[in-house]
Image 1 (tube, rainbow, N blue to C red):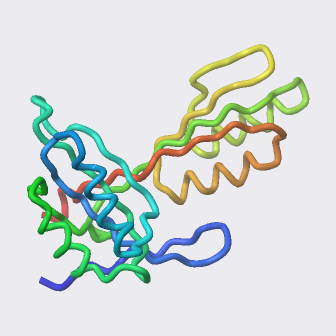
Image 2: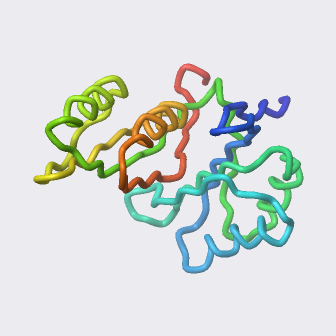
Length: 177
């Protein structure tokens, strides 16, 4: 089977090529540190990292790693990960054959004059307002990285935006199997 093509998306300035790896590991202390250390020792840039328990009994965790394809040869990464004793399975997820999502939370100041603009941005992004204060609102968007980038750009015009994004998570599409 040929290696999947890396993700070719854009950041704010330049195109970036990424590989998305879904790594199933034993849920034990130090495993995440060993995986991240492997990348650091070899000079591979991790663009995004997300980890959470992958089964009901919390014996396994899934680490989704988005790595810069230019800095890290895919076969070398997979070979090094396979050498780690706590790694159970590694999948390289092709963008066309997988679903990617990211979570964006942003607290945005609002006034009588800006409230309509914020509400418009929320509606256009298919985001949701999850908390309301007297002078600000908190927005949530769980969507593709491209949609999160677009909402983040729209919110840049507001002063004092507090914004946080999670790392990507991804799974193979059911229709690809």
